[in-house]
Length: 636
Image (tube, rainbow, N blue to C red; front, side):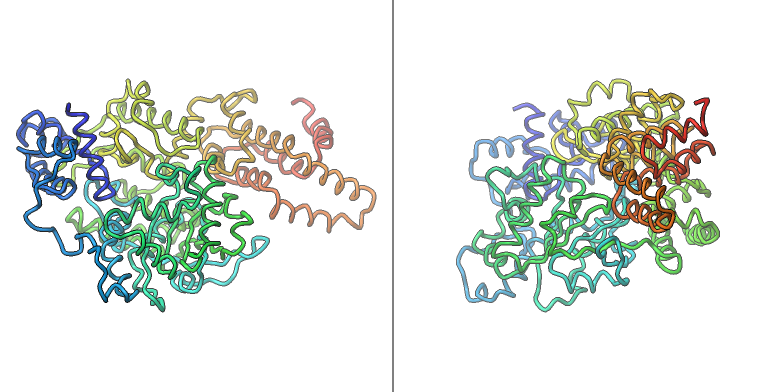
């Protein structure tokens, strides 16, 4: 057994026990110990101090002991792994770590007849794993790696609006009321609106809801289900995923079935929009099967981007749809900023309350900043950038740009970390690599990628994937040599940046821009369209490409425009109502036109001539568009 084989075994054992893979510092400790290095020698080859590595080492051997079921130290771990391979009987631990981590007794007693007692026991066994998944705000601790910030430290309660037919909105409701009153629920929102954060908060704060009966929260990332479920043999992926990911050795299958039949779970299914397209039908069918079975009394909460069509499936007709409202300026934005800087003050051991007040004042006095700050993810990035720069960009794309640069730069503020400072040219190389990876994986409808498949892209990069993970947090390690973008939004931004950096914005024949325009009917590309339009130095050609693609792709829409146009010409009394019908059709039915208008009205660089051309011909049939161009643009 060589070090790579041993490391893989340890990685898998720890994941089976905790649901988390080895961190980079744990991997360095393992490899260094394999080569009989001291902690100081290990530290000299990493970006950590000797004391930090020593502390991490003590925790790591304890973790490996718990995972392997025997006492493991820096001196005997090779032998322990050999026994793991040979399936020999392990030496018992001196004592269990906690009473809650022991396996359920196979013999039933009187207490197990009480369903509430069983629920409490199962929750206690699931709690550790659930906390590992949901305790930290996914994007806050990225920038303070390796420190973590608990979700409840900066969490701000969102409000929800029920989404009614034809896009109408119901009255504003508190999330607690919505979750309490609905068995089947889909939470919608724009990118970065806080959908995942809300589901995590529900998982870890279920006690706030005062359900009539105790429920067991289960949090499942839908974009990873296909990695553990064989859909050909497991159509009910939800039950299988619970058994595979959560129960392990803690709960027998009979007890699981009993709890499911009693409706004692609240299943939090995160990221319907992040499921690869080839699996989406299987996921929807699996959810429908689960809700049509004896387990239909269990609560289901699904999160999804509003622009994604999957939530509109006929199989979700029994689900109530609610949209996460934007943060308001009166309470939510100030509360989030204050919470953010209070936590930063604790982490950095420096009073930053004054910065919070200044930032809130800046937002209150700028309509453009208010618009950006209404989205929690962007407000978080605003706090990050303002912490370092004492100033803010006014465009969303510029905010991403500044934030990514900060994430890739050295943060010399934490005990135990001494990452190298990257020069501007090195940051450019890392960004170039990330752009290439983002564009390739996004085109393939993936968030994740394996190290060997991007090895050629890393040749000129000053950092390895593991170093990029430690240094920036833009990517995370998912499993052995497998990484993923930490948030879909950053993958989309880097993809847009890749397209802009390799295109000719002044050519209507540019291949990359035309390829992007061809995806106009694919909702998955919406954010990339908007970001490219905002980033590109001149958006004239790209907007014309989008318009041309929209005009050519939808024959039904063209027929409708012809009918309306011809009727308007023959009967002037129909002019006003027909114009209103066209506008309504665009608002509610024609997403490609809506996307074109959104791009046109974004913070893009577009000439008055092109803006006029698009606006004047937006509702004309193709043959009428050509007539308009001949009349108004004879030289083009």
